Image (tube, rainbow, N blue to C red):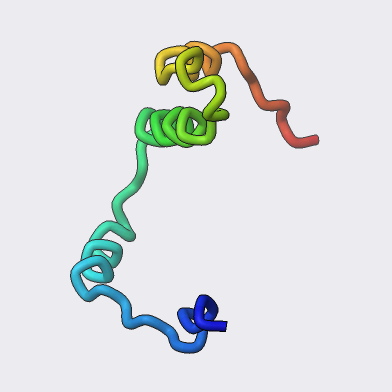
Length: 72
């Protein structure tokens, strides 16, 4: 039961982080920034066993060839 005590209370938000989040709320994200975030997310979620084969550049290259289908 000791390992579940973290869920009994709500931690107070970090005031510095809350200030940064508030100040960045209205800043638009460019398509290039969004693309890099997607590449970083895909790279970070690559399987550990393929760590040496999957690079950020290989994810970037693959992202140029993968297209999402438009919604009907």
